Amino acid sequence: MKPKTTLLCSIFIVMMSFSYAQKKGSSQSIISGKVNISKYHSREELDKFQKGQLLDLYIERIEVIVNILPNIAFATKPGVTMASLGIPETKDNRRALRENIDASETYFDKAIEFQKTILPYSDTTDLIAAILFYEETLKSLHTYDDFNRE
Image (cartoon, rainbow, N blue to C red; front, side, top):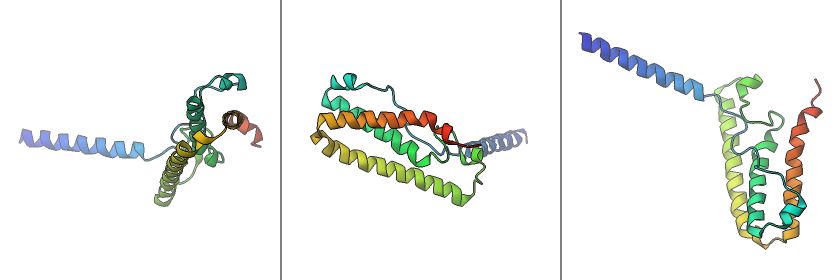
């Protein structure tokens, strides 16, 4: 009788841990993926970079922008969930969020595929200007809250 009780208790504990793990992971962050860059640059610094390095910086900035800008009405930093915003976590809302995240990932993958093929033909000066523009856009996210009226 004792082995049956031990087995049943063990199964119960395992089932509880699985259900807890599922509930814990159910609230997904609205902003996912890469959300910051390692460093902002000056034109003088970028002028010293090889074109391959510039291409990497350009792509890194696109990734951050694709992950943040479409969602700034909700959040500008990762970790914000539907629950933390007071949005009901219904099946439809979770599906919509998942579809949005999937669409962003698909867009980013296709955009990068295109960029890696075509971007090497761009003029280095234009590439530097685009990197600086993207960096200024990302810096402006730090002031986004200034536009919120409470």
